[in-house]
Length: 203
Image 1 (cartoon, rainbow, N blue to C red):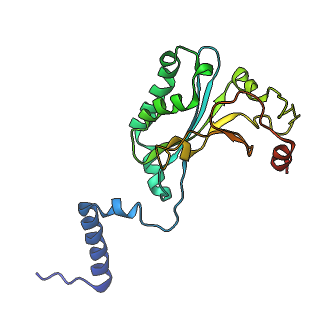
Image 2: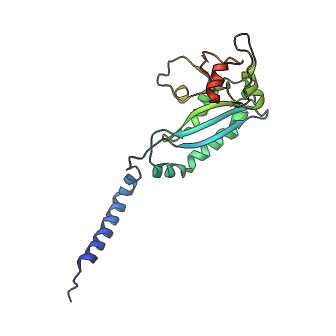
Image 3: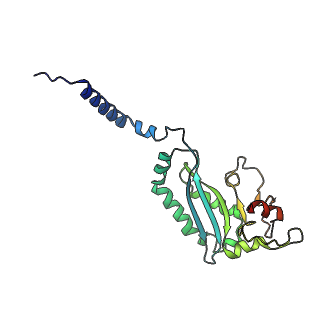
């Protein structure tokens, strides 16, 4: 008996065969990155505190621009979540529960060891905790106290991605103050907010 296969049936069988070949060859893994719609996605945000309630707010993003399919796949990598949970659990003890006395760059260098997957990395860090933040609003002669009711965290110490992972590791450290134009070469624990800074943020 001869089985005659019509045009429609042949087309369906061809599609099925292609799908099987793609699966065997791993082409679906290629497709996950095959899109011009790419961007960097936020992976996680965490608040790391010691027993005094002070610490750091950390933000992680995908290292590169990725598709939404790749981003969703990265989110399923349990080893990344486990590593960041270890960071949160160990930070207080490692710094003797005195994160407020720890240089932010020293904390960053320690925290970077938990970036175990090349597709995700730490991009930003801010000081965290009422006592810690208050240090950066102490008025001085050059930076008098300014009321900032609509920008509570303006002026607190933070670092950007190119501080965390500098292009040139030999560059001098730069300390930044959230939403302020002023930077410094050391951790200056007083107010850096100007009226111009606040007016710009409030707009």
